[in-house]
Amino acid sequence: MESETRLEKVQEPITTAPTEVREIIERVLQLEKDKLYQKAPKNINDDILKIIKEVLP
Image: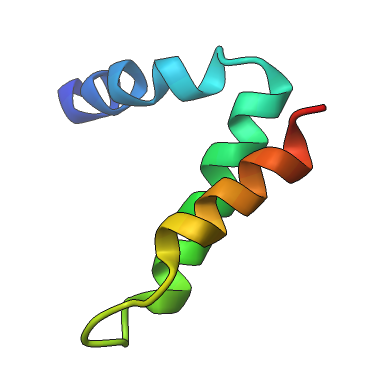
């Protein structure tokens, strides 16, 4: 039960964030997972910037 409480505290900033921020976080995490297999992921900064520009007006 203690580990559940710690996990909730760690996730709290994400779960309480505005919808746009949560979407950015989720998409960036997916992008990072997709690039994990690469030795040197290329253009990840550009991809993150693209995600932010798509989500935010």
